[in-house]
Image 1 (spheres, helix red, strand yellow):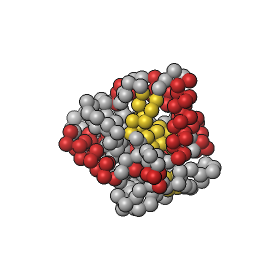
Image 2 (image 1 turned 90 degrees about the vertical axis):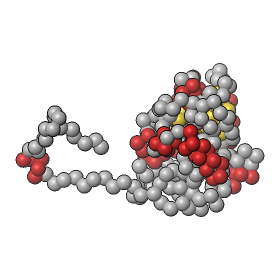
Image 3 (image 1 turned 135 degrees about the horizontal axis):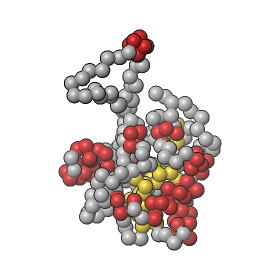
Image 4 (image 1 turned 120 degrees about the vertical axis):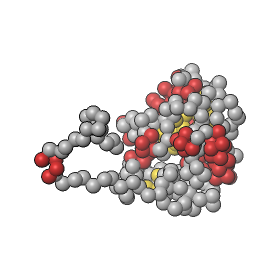
Amino acid sequence: MAGAVAGLCLVGCAVVPPGAGSSASVASGVPTNARTASPTSAQTASPTSAGESVRPTAAASSATPTPPKKTPTASAPVDTPFAVDGIVLVNRLHPITKAYVPASVDNTDGLSAELNAALKKLFADAAAHGLSLHVRSGYRSYATQADSYAQALATYDEATANLYFAKPGMSEHQTGLAADLTNAAGDRGDAFKAGPEAVYLAAHATDFGLIIRYPKGGTAITGYGWEPWHVRYVGPTVAASFAAHPGLTLEEYLGQA
């Protein structure tokens, strides 16, 4: 994330704030080809000086006003994650209920088979680059997420907690399709951002069907800060679109921004 809070794990992380300890389906949700679905659904001018109003020109005053952009309305939590072209999207507008438990919980770590396979290849490639990566936090249940969010509220002000932690039902960790990574030193937050592993993931995650789910500069869309350690499995074909458009968010790709 954008460094506002050093050492946080963040969006929905079961990992606790700096200095504390931490924790590791629907179908993989990956289509055979790229997205085909279309979307479903300020800055204000300041006066030129204190107390001075600004009179619009005749052209401006006669122009047809542009209607304000509507703020998307959050859907009610559902038992089956919202998806576009088979790609699951769990966020603040598309939450899931505590009843949703992915089939991957039958695995020892709760991560989907596709994500596990991708991570295995990613870690091997990172090692070839002289780097060490491993999962710091993977699948988290609704209850675990609720505990994480409650701890965040007890530690930080509400605005900060909501920027860095997902409420229960709004974390894609519950789907088994996402994982927070760390390095050999167990770095998180700003320490991870400043290391070579963050640079490596930004350049190579898409090679293995993974994306940086909360990219730098995407807060206005995702609602969360930059998390270079949080990877999400989308499959190689979809990931290729993200490789071609650095900074792209999943919401934008799925037409939900």
